[in-house]
Image 1 (cartoon, rainbow, N blue to C red):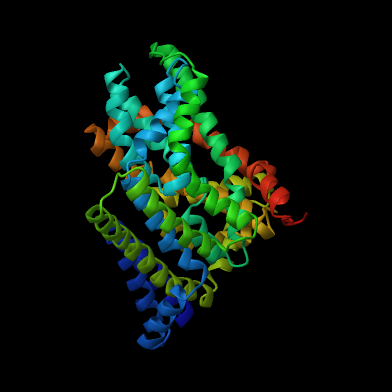
Image 2: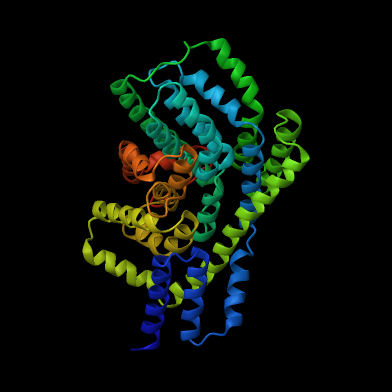
Length: 438
């Protein structure tokens, strides 16, 4: 057996073995990379150099700012205000509180950019509220966790920044714009699903629609929604880079949370920053170790081997796109979101662009949604665990209640996969983006 084959077996074998043994993902990625590089005869100093190089990126500076902004706004008492705004918009319909839950996640996702933060912050408000109004608790938990994935698509999402950095040459601004229609489509599909279930189970309506109440709640929530305008409008209009807009949004979030909504005192600010640092440390360690892992994959020509293996199954474009989605969904069941983006992008993106004709921006949206579905699936689904813990419901019952919403998400995923303009229309209009092959 030659050195390259042995190193490949050690890299992938040790990685999946540690995943099965439930090693923390950063350790699994880092240790398997070290074993591989030692097998190839590289020095340990090369590992350190590659780790430092992996996080020495100007684009990645946006990630800590976006995480900090989300934590500050999530801890600053805006959840109740966004719930009231969403309820004023759609709460009057049958099952209106369920649809308000979906719409609320769309608003909150544009602030936090995190499905876990969405579920933790809004779940503690919405699940008890829905239960008190006669909704089944498992249904309330299911709609809360599935709607939280909208925050992964609606900008600003730090996972999109990670994808843009990993893919290379993909505009963060284009990715931000590309997420809006898919995020709205996902929200619409979940609202349709919840409405059908609400009709069958005769869930209650909310208060009658009032334009006066809508404007009142909009006026109250406008400060929270302003953070989204700073990031998206600033980046799209070319006023700021993504990193600059994220830094400004952090200062804005701090001022709004402390002085406008007064949901945080200075002690709360320090606690929020502590939480942001903990989250950031996990993300940066993953990025650093994954850069070494990616170097090993490239050196050993694993992407080419994977492409040949996949193409040996079929050369039909439609089947290839479905196969790529299946691969990402399976990875989502066993890995968290950031490592999937960091590890799978160098392998799957060339197949998507060269053999399926998918644009890198479109594929990025597909990958993010696939990973979002993975956050809801056992055994590693972190958002599923958070929702079950908040509702104090057995995970298997929550999964059962989530099945109809999995279908809604899969339908949305297929539409995004086969209709490019769902992702690319806004980038083409606002960013003058020229898609692959366009």
